[in-house]
Length: 144
Length: 84
Image (cartoon, rainbow over all chains, first blue to last red; front, side):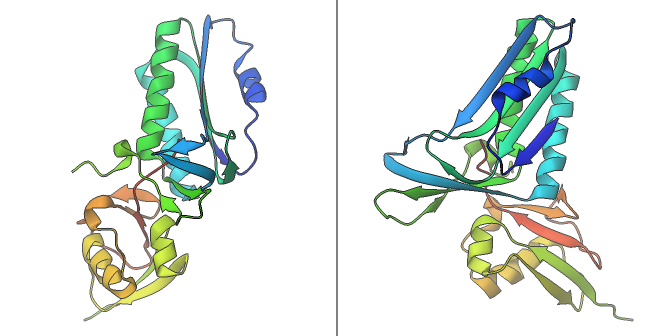
């Protein structure tokens, strides 16, 4: 399951949604948070925006690819958008599997691929009043 | 026989700021591909992002830059992604 939401991400509830599967001996999760310092500048807050139709399509494709490539039971990724403060959770990934190797590998694959393939943008606003900047993930640039 | 091509163009992130709008209707007298449409709109709106930093999408799917645009297509230019 992939979702994008303006609401705060409830990691405990998402984790709970992946439990209750007797085939699973492993659960891994990744949380991405808004940090205070980026590139030497003091961050005040971030605004994430998205292209919802394409983001949902791309996000679902990432989850489907993870399920095909790794021996996992289930995978969930939720990305937040709108204004986020320092310390807020921007993205959550959770994976269940029979064993830990596949769970770790799929979790890594999902966050890396989401950062490259799902159209979500981040504008960083700074404490010193300097002009806000649009950021770019190195892995999110066109491959040509 | 000439036929016009009517498109909806969606703008996001830095392109939305520079265009000053979320979307617009464009009517072309002759078909163009996505790259040619970006060149035209980049000049009109003084976009600073070169095509090499963008990806194109038609009808909510990524597509190659040389894809010909058809009547009623929804076109978007995707600035560098920054999720996570």
